[in-house]
Every structure is written in structure tokens, then in C-alpha cells.
Amino acid sequence: MEELPLKQHKHINPFARDIIQRYLLFIIGLFFSAMGVAITKKGELGVSPISSVANVMSIRLPQLSLGYWLIIWNCALILGQILLLRQKFQWIQLLQVPLSFLFGWFTDFGVWLISFFTPTRYWMQICLVIAGTIVLGFGISLAVIANVILNSGEAFVKALSDTIHKEFGNVKVFFDVSCVGIAVLLSFLFFHKLVGTREGTIFAALCTGFVVKFFNRLLKKPLETFLVKSIEPDMKK
Image 1 (spheres, rainbow, N blue to C red):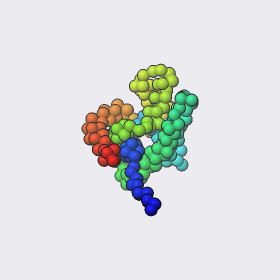
Image 2 (image 1 turned 120 degrees about the vertical axis):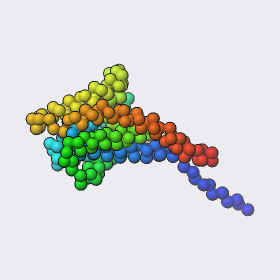
Image 3 (image 1 turned 90 degrees about the horizontal axis):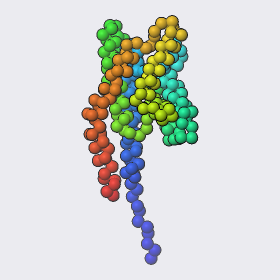
């Protein structure tokens, strides 16, 4: 009598599950980062350095939203990585493209979400900048803990630092200052005055890193523990 093959139960590879969970965490971080940009934008005192060029362009050419200008800017940074690294460019980094679209769409959603509120006092604008910086830092910390892929800005800085053989931190400072410089130049070119890059940009540049470090210390261990425990049952099977 012919034996029937036993039906095998399929289980998700624990390492694949780990990657999926980490990308989900990264996307959640991306969402909060975009919310932070949208909240800061509402304060009308400038946005973070890396978003400052897109912010000025969205004011000058409002036919495209801030989110879509961020998509264009991030895709330009991805193209920059390819030109810098050439054969050394890892094609897995092209995942930055759909993630850049997500970030742009999340930003526009955030702008729509808080569109009902209009700050009427300077202190309200300052509060929005502070709140936006905290939310942005929280989102960045989640993306860092996910540890799957760099965002386009950080990836561009890494590509540049690897190419010119300079320390990442120093190149990052140069990149942020350059972004603000370009935004200021565009502002005077288009409006003949400073628009879209103000004290909020300086505050975000100085404080975001500290917020990220705070949330990293607070969240890294519990989130890493959760990610490990969630795949342990599958690894034992």
C-alpha cells in the first residue's frame, strides 16, 4: 500500500520574520519622522536642515507639496550616492526610493492632519518647533534601532565620507550646513529675503541629535528584546 506523504506545516523563516519586523519598525520610525517635519513646518520657523531645501522649493512652487519636494530631494540624494560610489553602490540601497516616497506621503498626511491649527502667537510657533523636533527625534531613533537601511540623507553622507576618506561625523556637519546654505541662497534668489529657513532650523540642527540619543537609551534595549523574543519560538521549531 502506497504511503501518503505527511502534510508539512510551513513556518516563516525566523530570520525572514526578523527582517520583516525590523522593516516595519523602520517604516513606523519613518512615519513619526515625517510627522515631526510636518509639525515643525506648521511652526513656520524653518524645518530640519536636510528638509530645508525642499521646504523653500515648496513655498516657491506650491504646485508640488512639501512631501513631493522631499521625494524629489531624497531621490536626488540617492542619485548622488550612485554617482559617488559607482560600482561600489549596493543595489539593495535602491530600497531607499520607495521609502522616500513613503516619507513624502507621510509628510503630506501630517501636514493635512494638523491643518486645522494655525499658530497665532510666536510662543505657539516655538512650541510647534520643539514638539516637531521631539517627534522627529523619536522617529529617527526607531529607524536607527531597526538597523536595516539608512535613509537617503545619511546614506549620501556615508557615500561621500567613504569617497573622500573623511570622518562621517565631520561630513555630516558639512552636509547639514550645505543644505541650510543652499536653502538660504534659494530663499534670497526667489524672495529676496529669508523664507523657510529660520531659528527653527537652527534649533532642529542643534537638538535633534540629543533627542535621538535620549530615545535610543530609553527604547533600544526593550525593542531589541522584543524583536529577539518574537522569533525565538520559530527558531526552536
